Amino acid sequence: MAEDYPDEVNALIIPWMMARTKEEIMKLCQDKRVPCVPIYDIAEVVNHRQIKAMDFFVELDHPEAGKLKYAKGPCTFEKTDGNGRHPRLYSARTTKKSIVNN
Image (cartoon, rainbow, N blue to C red; front, side):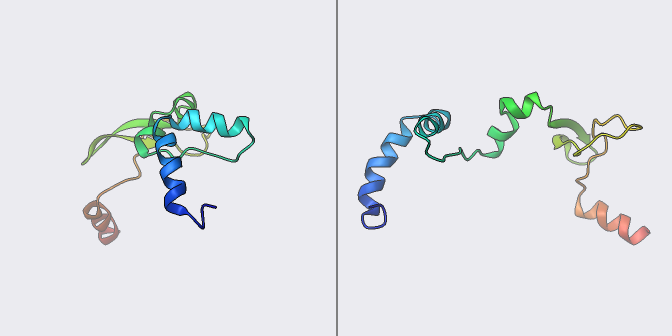
C-alpha cells in the first residue's frame, strides 16, 4: 500500500507520529512485535539515560577547542585511570606540526 499510495500513507502516518514521542512509538511497536528503533540526534545520544548510566562520555579541556565531551576508550588498562584525559581530536594545524616535526 505504501508503495502504491505514498502521499496518502504519509498523510495518515505523519500526524500520528508527530503527536507521540520516539519512546512512545517504540513502545507501541514493540508491544505489537513490530521492529522499530528510534533515531536519535547527537544531543539525544549524549543526554540519553543509558549512555549517562554507562558513563560513556568524559568532559575534557581541549587545548584549542575548550571543554568538550569525548567518548571514553573501549577498555581500561590496569595502569591507566581510564578517564580519557588525552583528547584525540586536534586541529589540522596541530596535526600538521606534529607530522612535520617528527
